[in-house]
Length: 335
Ligand code: SF4
Image (cartoon, rainbow, N blue to C red; front, side):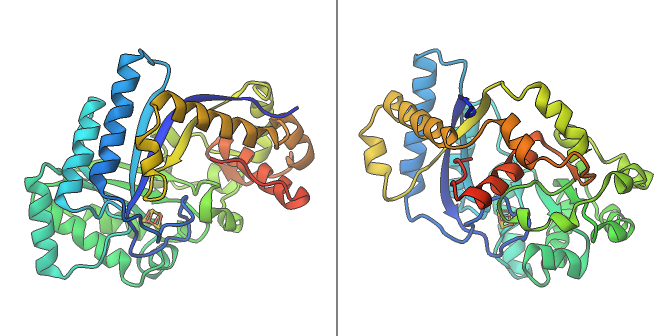
């Protein structure tokens, strides 16, 4: 029997600032493509949805946004993203460094000063090993030096940072050096945590980089203490399977994505929020009807002997759906 879905909300997405490089572990497959749609039209649509949620007392759903894939915004966009976050009672104060264009020292200092003046208090970096290893994962020579240089300049200005460090087979041997480099950078570290690659987007190609139970269970203390936050459940496929099967018949709760671009904005502007939401639900529901339910996917493709480690139930569901798509030609549902 196919899997039912429950829509927990809508993610309005705008490809506004393409990445200047493509990471091999990227969750989003088409990071280079930007939309010429002016941010102001996107923002107006988002505010309409937020008004609709309040007016209809839809406390059961979330309205989320993604303006990316990089955060290389101009100041006007930055303020607009801040206005949207403020509607959700949140402050927009941290910028991701991934995907930024290269700027020389002077331009970088100006860029930092402008963002600090606009209310940005710090940066988030994602690092996969050091030096050439990180550069290879991130698809740009010199990216490790560039990101750490920005963190240094920001730290000297009193800005904070958050660090996500990827654990993969080829980043593990570099962890001591990576942590030493980061510890030597001035400024407050608000959060430092380790994660695995998700099974999503481009990262699906790197299953051979996934650590095993044995590696997980013998991680050095310096790394192990950084397993925290939302992504600290590291289980192998064989460990996840019984847990997944306990809730296999439950509907999948998901946030539905809606790409907003120059081709559909006019239709969206002229449609009611109710109609847009209902149409997305319909599309997602039909998409999931093509796929077998979780128990059937597990029975056909699950490997109860696999000791490779994943962070999310979703990673395995996605992996099994990929296997089903390859075996049958059925296309994978929207994510
Ligand atoms: S910076 Fe982020 S969004 Fe851009 S390619 Fe890398 S992982 Fe993907």
